[in-house]
Amino acid sequence: MDKNTIRLLRPDFQYESLKNIPVEDLINNGIKGLLLDLDNTISPWNDRTLSSEVVSWFHKIKAQGIKACIVSNNRQPDRVAAVADILGIQYVCQAAKPGKKGFGKGLKHLGLGVKQVAVVGDQLLTDVLGGKRMGMKTILLMPIDEQEFGGTKVLRFLERLFGRKTYYTRKFARQDMAARRYHDK
Ligand SMILES: [Mg+2]
Figure 1 (spheres, helix red, strand yellow):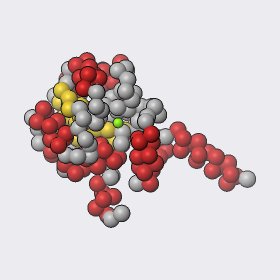
Figure 2: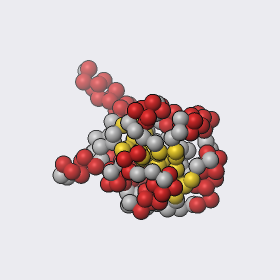
Figure 3: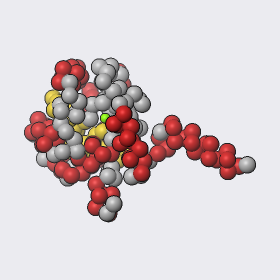
Figure 4: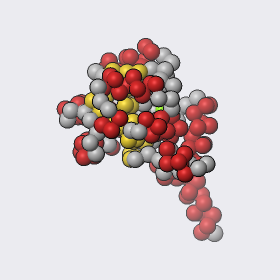
C-alpha cells in the first residue's frame, strides 16, 4: 500500500464515542458542520435506540451552532429517517460510502463547504476513507457494539492492519493481557 493510501486512512481525531467529542475541539478546528455515520456511531447496529447521552450531545452541538446530518450506507430509509427526526437533523441513506456522492448530498443539506465539515464514524474504510477523499476532516469513534454483520467484521480485520488505535477495543485489550502474561513467564 502506498503512502497516499495510508494517509487517506488516517483519521484527524479519535475519540471513544460521540459524547467524548468536546464541542470546543470542533470550534477550535473551524468545524461548523458534521456528517455522521448512523450504525454503531449514533445508535447500535440496526437499532432505533438512542441513548440519552447521545441525544444531549446533539443538543449541545446545536446550541453551539454546529450543524449535523446523517450520512448512512443503511438501506432502510424508515430507520434512518426515524433517528434523524428524533435528533431534528437531515439525512442521506444508501450513501454508498466511501463514494463521494452521498457525502456531497450531505454537504448540500448542511449548506457548508468541505473545509468547514468533519465526517464522524466508526469505520476507517467507509467513513474515514470517504471523508478524506472529499478533503474533509475525519473523526473516528469506537463502534457502539459488536453486533455487526459478517461484511463489517472483515472490514474491521483490515482496519487493524491499517493501524486503528487498537487499545480501545476490548478484544485487543484481552489479547494484550494474554501476551503480557505469556511474557511474564
Ligand atoms: Mg458505522
